[in-house]
Length: 275
DNA sequence: ATTGTGGCCTGCCCGC
DNA sequence: TGCGGGCAGGCCACAA
Image (cartoon, rainbow, N blue to C red; front, top):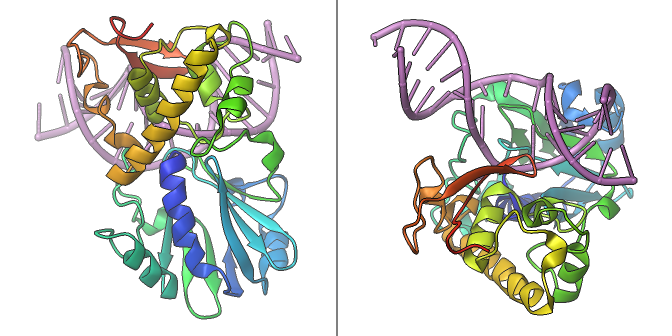
């Protein structure tokens, strides 16, 4: 996915439909609907509702509806939120240089997602604006009443106290802890490698081994990195990113980067600096 | 209970 | 040039 940074851009795009009434629901891809709700019943529930807020927690985007329901949108690795009509005007106004209706621009690993056959879910509104998810790999999903309590504090605003709690857990590798959405919500693979590289912390190190000073330092790097990469324009704009390939070298010290699998994800890190 | 694996899909890039 | 395998920003349901 889209990590927290991209989903935040989607959230801003979705603010364009706040106050609009849903007049069309295209949820024909039953596989994309999670939580046991079917296409027909979901359409019945949503039709006529007004979106009252667009919220985000981690990588989960939520549309609050005036009848009390919450519509949760997840994007997997290749999902994108697109908008058209009055909503798109607001998006292009708020994101300089962004293409109309496309808040993030070309997404890594998701080329070709403009293809209409990749549209997995769409909402139409009474003012003729629209919002839809394009997701070639179908890794995302739409859910009614997502369980927000299963997500930890948002990584963009996590406090040191919260992070200290999230890092409890003995031998669990630091990277696995940071990417566990129940502990901290929003950190994906690229962002995680960048944060640990900036913090000079090994991804393999047990999360529980961080002392108070290390937790504080990690918290500062974490929030600063999210802010920095948000400003640059995405999770893939980190300083480590160009070196995240076989044979890559540390941008700071030039040491050969290690490529390991940690927490089930490919991890690049500098064995000379990250301890 | 935790940890590992497969699955969902498409597209790109590499090596043969 | 063509083709096949590996790999990709996520996360869920299973099995062990």
